[in-house]
Length: 232
Image 1 (cartoon, rainbow, N blue to C red):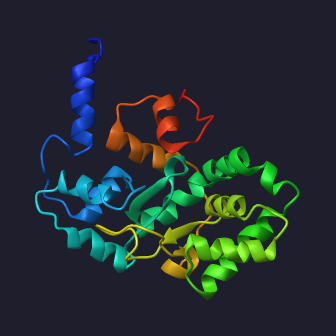
Image 2: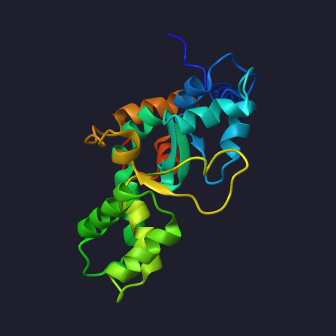
């Protein structure tokens, strides 16, 4: 039996570019491309649009904006605890798997400022505020300061953004927008509660389809999850 072919660095690079849909433009919808790529980095509003335009043979700004405004796509915290634009169904699939990443980030950055607090109560309070009315970070910080005047309200706000699955409400986060954007809970925006996590296996397979070949360390760096094991 012949030895398996080992890809050199150039072949690996070309394989990754092909999986990332970057060797040529493709006849796919924005939804299909986002799900193949397992989302697009969305810390700023414009890059997801540019990412789709560079990959798709027919793409208009309105294609993604309409997905966001119709709640078929959302912008919220996912891989590595950073903002991504994904389809609504992918957010529901991915956020439960990635919640440990967000919990770890909250502890790493804000453990001291939330020492002794019931974090479940903190998340539930903000969920009740957001379910009553979509609120900007400024408005939510004011509510937190009034509820816990002895605490650092900014730290509480950032903690909640890790602990509570939320999404940004359009038109905030759409092409050309900036400034403070209202937040909504996933339950209220999508009308569907987050399911329980069924583990990272499906997410890892999808990552490999979009980024592979890749190592365990690569997957961990992309997702923010740790202690993933090399398959035997």
